[in-house]
Length: 439
Image (cartoon, rainbow, N blue to C red; front, side, top):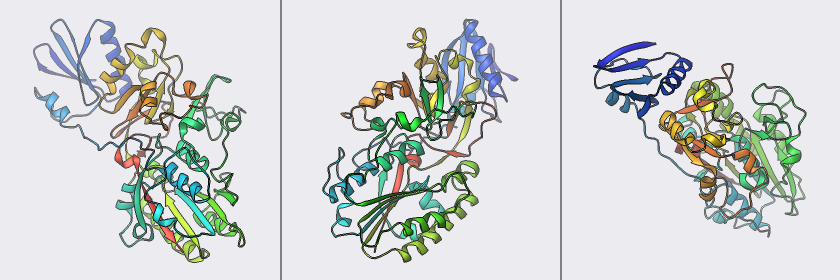
């Protein structure tokens, strides 16, 4: 800890380790200090005439203007809330309407002009993490993807893979399917399980629990009287985008009407590791663009290809929530769902004070909502949709939504440190491109 006297009875305490910061904060609160201000993840406390300003954010020039210095660190991000009038669910509703079937969601007004002819093949492709900002900043204007950019949608919320890919495959919102994040609490095993695998999130140990059995869904094309295919990589082995595209081409029946969902894991994986605008992410997207040029050249006539993303990405820094006993002691179980859309099941005696403490500590980085308020606002689907029976368990009492460059590491010290992430409501995470190619 570094202690600097600002003025009489007012001290600035800097902690290079977040764990020490959270411990000191809790100790002062237990000694009767009260929080009087919160500035850029820093907390000011007072007892009688004594004041402390606690920080784990490094500042070079610490003087009597320290609060102004910290406020100047604030960055205001453009926020985009979910809009289920201009999302992938609306794109899928339009495709279902094209084949004479209904959907709970409004038609995509931008897709109408592309559905004015008969197609033998309609392909919906998701490139994981390729948000509007990623496309614009990581590829040149004359690239295949940018030159065929048609319009922009908002991502499904949470803007994360498990929720958005399932919504795309099923044509249903997360509130309907129960696929609300990366991992959720299952009362049968009293653990948080990764939805895709059934593995325990905190320990990475298999549980044998089949999440798909309790969260089943049908593909959006199940009743369209077409040859429907889900084209995904074989995640048990190494794979390339070229192989996935070849599989797509090989599964287009010549004398049938085909509808496909095609998915690729990049550039998401590399952006998590290296950053949203890293050389590695740029090279990956350039390779994807080249592979797509070869792919579309081989597509048969009368094909409509719709390419989008499950979510975007934003560069981030970690907050080690697992080290914050002040918050964790208020919870019945560990937080869950996703690092930038985190849910909290709060002990009864703390339900009133929890949002106040949370806002004092993390209000710069997250907006905290009572769960019902987000449901009423239609964050996870249309307000009038009947929630899946698991929603109450999964979303619990409060939901914290990421609004700038921080994310919660709530797993532990051995968790991977992400350079870029998603599941918040910044424009970088929530705006996704729609690329249209007709042949």
